[in-house]
Image (cartoon, rainbow, N blue to C red; front, side):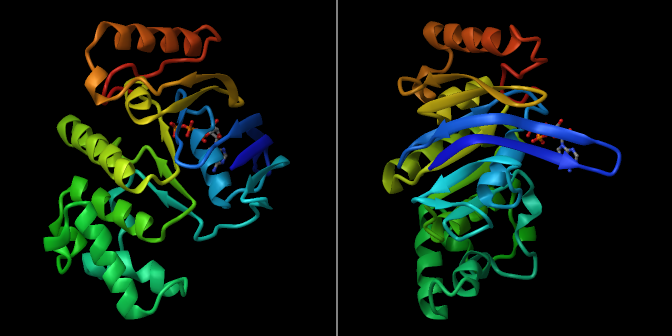
Length: 259
Ligand SMILES: Nc1ncnc2c1ncn2[C@@H]1O[C@H](COP(=O)(O)OP(=O)(O)OP(=O)(O)O)[C@@H](O)[C@H]1O
């Protein structure tokens, strides 16, 4: 997928807010690509544009040689909020429903595939439960299973673990990496945590705010959960912090849960 010279704006009768300015990114198959930057640098806006909800005022987003112009089943978003699951549907139906609604599969096949992905996120035994019976972490697992079941070309995650407690967040990061090892999907992940970016990403784009521009791109292959607390990991975090700060970029969380 390619993001080419993409500028995004919000227009109200009073004013125009430019959220991103001429962003260029190339995201390859099976990348775990992270957008990292302080609050307000346009990460969510860019993700929504890739999802097809906001059209660029200049530039283009290209996926499989086609210009993105609307939402589609090839790009599925997992949000931060726990209430993204319709509460009146069972866990199984939550995962199966988009497959049926998008006519990707018939009802029976959809339920089969839903079970498969629920199993992958460790929730096979909760298929008949309802969202209100689940913890925040479990609801995020259902949202991830639902997204992966659609087998999108790109899975888009907007601070998916930000509302979780630190321990659950760590476990979800571990699970996401485990799932990626198994399924090798293409991931675009938004966070304002430097640590999370280094753990989750193989590539990290640093965005500076107002309007968001790509400040640097970092190769994060070598970092993972095993690196946490290590001296070189901390040095890398500090370097990124400086890169984001030098521009007067504002505060960026350098610790889990901060910001
Ligand atoms: N609906 C909107 N109308 C007008 N301006 C908006 C709207 N949504 C966002 N903005 C502005 O666009 C800019 C980018 O916002 P965006 O939410 O994409 O940033 P972000 O990097 O995702 O921040 P955060 O981490 O706080 O979510 C900000 O200056 C914000 O104030």
